[in-house]
Image (cartoon, rainbow, N blue to C red):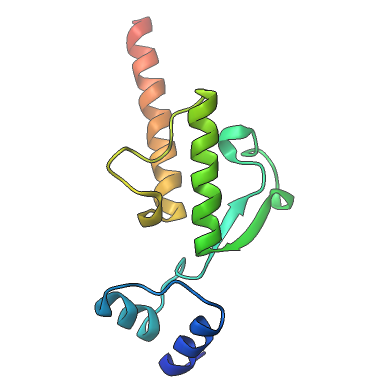
Length: 121
């Protein structure tokens, strides 16, 4: 694994957008977490029918690129009006990891199912 100085040098060499706060930068350099650099991305988004696909529908993107792809998806979904964003109005995509997004989608599906059952009773 890279030492903090080596990690900083590698990130600067690829023009990585470093955190603005000293505390966030220190954490990134000293104790990087899963999702800081790379994230899984569905090539065909789950919201656009890619949820039932296998590994061939997954790719690895750097975190900034994944953020951009997620923003594009949310824009497409808003334009189509077919599905609400998985991100609530007070939660930015840049602050949500894939597990949180998955759990939020799962909770939204449960809530939709529960409210549909209440309407039928």
